[in-house]
Image 1: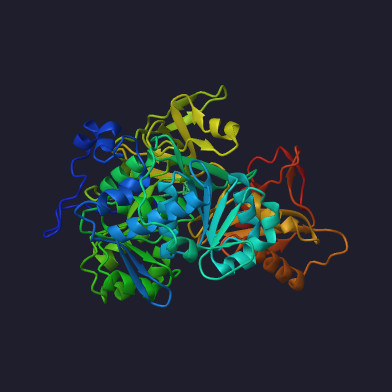
Image 2: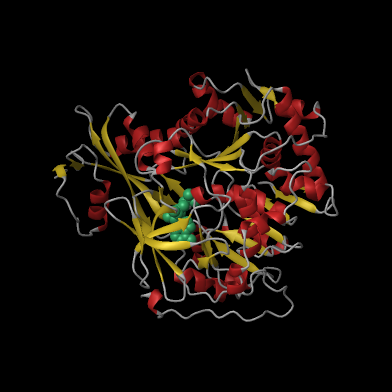
Amino acid sequence: MDVATGEMPIIRKTPRPGLPAPNLADYAEACAGFTWQAARAVLDGLPGGGLNIAHEAVSRHATGRRGDHPALHWIGKDGTRRDYSYRDLEAASNRFANVLGTLGVGAGDVVFLLLGRVPELYIAMLGALKARAVVCPLFSAFGPEPIATRIGIGKGRVLVTTGALYRRKVAPIRAGLPSLHHVLVLDEAAPDTWSFPALMSGASDRFTIPPTDAQDPALLHFTSGTTGRPKGAIHVHEAVVTHHATGFYALDLHPDDRFWCTADPGWVTGTSYGVIAPLTHGVTNIVVEAEFDAPTWYGILEAERVSVWYTAPTAIRMMMKLGAEVARARDLSALRFMASVGEPLNPEAVLWGVAAFGQPFHDNWWQTETGGIMIANYAALDVKPGSMGRPLPGIEAAIVERRGDGEVVPVTAPMQGGELALKAGWPSMMRDYLGEEARYRKCFAGEWYLTGDLAMRDADGYYWFVGRADDVIKSSGHLIGPFEVESALLEHPAVAEAAVIGKPDPMAGEIVKAFVALKPGYEAGEPLRRELLGHARKRLGAAVAPKEIDFRANLPKTRSGKIMRRLLKAREMGLPEGDISTLESDER
Ligand code: AMP
């Protein structure tokens, strides 16, 4: 079905009685009157000038009228609930900023957080930002290898984690991480570590944020390319201007909202919108420690009276499996706005939202490098199911074609595919790939930032996702670089070559599939397959490890020695093999 040509019904928006007016009601007017300077002026700024994310997220509310308003409403795996008002969050994050001070950690030092979604993750992140350290949250499901790579690239000085994670994943790699001076452990004593609770209880809950320049680095988020190491995108304190403005326009946050972003802070969504944007708006941010489980999620939406829900296509597809009646049986009358990000949201899922919740899911688009939402189906926009929506005020997007001479030329005709580009200069634009300036510079052509995604724009200015220009894998919302998975497989003594592709999967979007060629003397078969799957899981963690492994005598390669993942994928899917002129050796 070609949704872009209008076979899909457009979901028209009409005012919904009893609900607050959408923040972005008149698109043309909002775009025309928008400047980033004005967007920044809505925020406080530090008393002596400058801009610090944690001040905007916590301090200004804590010391103002919203001091007692619930900031974090945490729901633990066992159902325990813990509430933090803005004042509580201010005091706790002040303590952590002081802890860093006593450890001699400050401006520019990188603090890694390897934690599940526990309150200490949020406290440590905000405290580190106050201390002007750079924060890098990692997925707690990562195995030792990805952790070592990232702490190595980021030259992490501090790590906050749990005893169990430390023992299993960090202790074995610590000797190879000379930059890592301090490990703070939440819950148990471990050799060569500090006790987080002991340090916190000895620290003052008063802290004055030192002068912070809006251009000081604040956040580090890793993202994967098809080749090479993971890229560490650096964002600065000024990013908070985008977080706040997009929380207003794209997520339609209102002061009394109870907001739930289901993403983990290990992914940029879980930081920009799971921590910063809701707090800058002074709303109640609901944090759920448990992983996805449809009945639990429905229970949370209902019992917590969630009003704005930001989630991802994989979860939506899993909920769809249970049918719309399951949603309709719940009292979800508080739910005003639902948004989705991370991978293409099928038109069916958008429409299922209407059947199940009485409103569509609002797809929006952005990536680690953009730091915040760029293109969105905002609350007042008529939804064309399958479209990512329109560029937000302050964002100039285009479809461009790269020319051989490095120039890019905008494609103006509607529904012509090309690369999605954004006019550089919005506040949350990444400022660097850590230690990889050449790779960073390659993302820009003149005034355009090139996203690496292929898209189209229709005559009404709606954008439609086509695919990624490279072959990075997107599994359950996680961006996975084949290189990292292949490297882990190659560490196994039996493996001679490995290539990894994303295999389309109705639930996860894609699953990681590996093709492996063995060294002589090893026998392909079920026992070895199981051994390799276990090895990869141990090294990489369940979220990144392959789900399937096939054995091949050889892997197809180009003349320059690059494995042709594209070809493996085409064969896996029974698609035409495309241009194979550079193919040198083949598997067959
Ligand atoms: P990440 O940096 O991990 O957030 O991944 C960013 C990439 O995810 C984008 O470059 C897109 O390829 C994909 N993506 C994010 N949002 C969407 C969306 N709404 N529709 C399609 N693809 C998306």
